[in-house]
Image 1 (cartoon, rainbow, N blue to C red):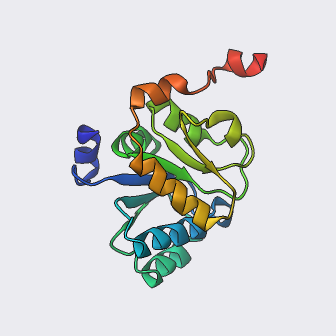
Image 2: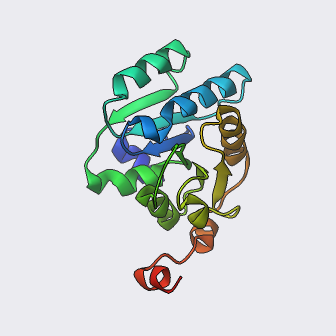
Length: 178
């Protein structure tokens, strides 16, 4: 984690929530920003958020982040080369995917492979790959449930080796068999 943070220029002593994907309306990022604002208002925002990716929603999300007083707690890292994805996953303490719609999201599979706990909307195939041992599921579009779950994921002690071990077998053979 420390090596990845050093490579990415992140503070080794901070805690980080990661979103990795397109900044698109279907990804539910306004819900995430409202959840973060709720945590900040309650004095429970003990982490910074890294939004890695780009898209048409970025200007609106940056404006909303500022409007909600989150500018110093949310970092828009922009689109990054695919070879950096493992570094971002290793540097983070948790992954958030607040999508309103999904299929089988690769980012959740990648997080599972690195033992990164996930807070994600219970949409598409996400409930098939996130369990209580690997993360927390929330109803899509529910900012208050997301805020509670983010607080919980950072309040709980996660061991990355255990999260990775508890992740379902998602090899081509295992998926084909299921």
